[in-house]
Image (tube, rainbow, N blue to C red; front, side, top):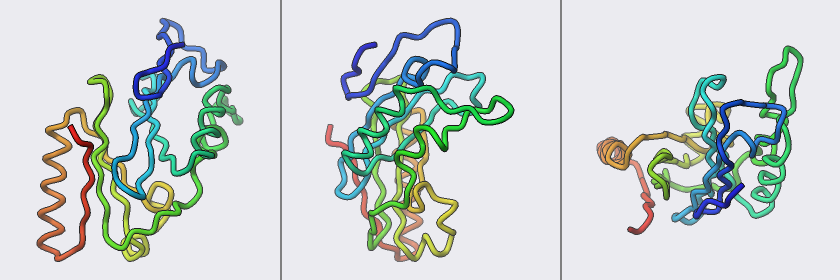
Amino acid sequence: MTMHDAGGTQPPRTDTLDLTQPVAAWMPTLWYPSYTEGMPTLCVGLAPTPPFSRPHKAWLVETPGERAALVAALAKPIPVREGNVLDFRHGPDATCSRRSRFRPRDMVVAHYAPTDERWPHLVVAAAPEAVVQAVGAASLVRERYIVMPFETEAEAHEFLVHLGAIAGRAGAGLRFGHPAH
């Protein structure tokens, strides 16, 4: 296993998928640092398709303790529940699934750019309490965040421009974060 330059692990891919192995053996991950105060660091895994229906798995990490717990969980196999179903909720998801500590006054939106073109661009929005109450905490990641994946930087920027226009028309407060190039 080799360390990816952004701090994630990138294990070698194999032709056989053994889901009884530790997650890190079959799901390469990449860490996306936060460039915006209060926003989480992301750990994104490339899920093998099939058997997974979505190509990416993202964990939003808010503290060094959560990061250490997630790294430890990725070094173990995923628990399996009845019916031979992988139970991420009681595996790595449990390390960073509690309600977010971040309480923004306005909507905070950040673009997370990958360090490798094979990985997605992610736009993460942290909703203020009024939005959380309006849409329901259960519909948000960590009861606070909306995560949108994009294949290219241009698609992510187009979405950000659209979001900014909507916020402007509504008179809503919106704060953007983007990595410096």
